Length: 309
Image (cartoon, rainbow, N blue to C red; front, side, top):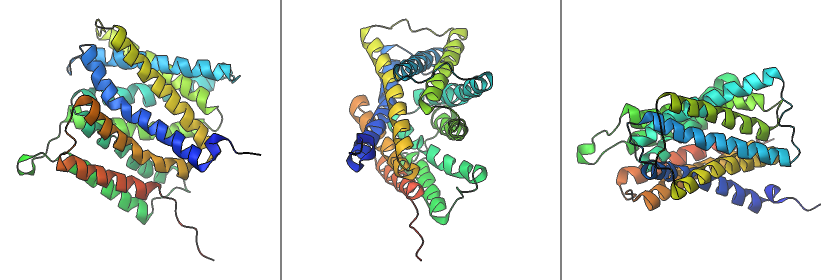
């Protein structure tokens, strides 16, 4: 039988790269969304409302697609719904509170690189959660190189000044940590749930929570029009498509093989931020940090060589 597209080497490469392009495009998309909707960096309530609409719509799209594929989207019992709600609170709501605020106070280029620290947080947390996923010397070296990249990206121009703010770069790193912790919890839940259904519900619930936070804080999207509405729809679609395709790839391929593509996300995030936001890409600190982060992620995700007999 001829293998499906998501099982061939070329198909896996193409689909995994597509997911990374979509996730990488989120950085300039959010920044452009702030500009189109006239959302100021200090207007946290409107930022939360913007994020809430995006993820509630993304979850709804994913659940509709899952239902069309005959997946039992309403078959979760009470305990599973509480678990998915907790996942939505952490992986979508809490994570994106920090991410959206951080992105409003930092450049898209720096955010895309620094958010890659989530890979290293995942490695450290998995060491304490899974007996078969301990930190090795190679993984430790990868984490060290990756975090060195985070330090380098914050080195400014004059006299190597350190350019870092808690509301900007700090919140992006916190968001990466929250995502890493929530992803491990999601991995546990997916053993008893369909990953697409689980992801759809957690995005939808998390989106509703963010929408509630934004409305309670007086947030508003008064400049919502054709262009900003199209951008919002694109961001919802990129989330639903990327998560769905990534789950499909993980189901039919070794996790280590798919995880190795994660290093492409900061690459595309940096490139697309430079293209669509007009941000400088030719700063030595950005280029050096990008090389270090990608090298670190490659070391962490590279599968170990089989032991010789």
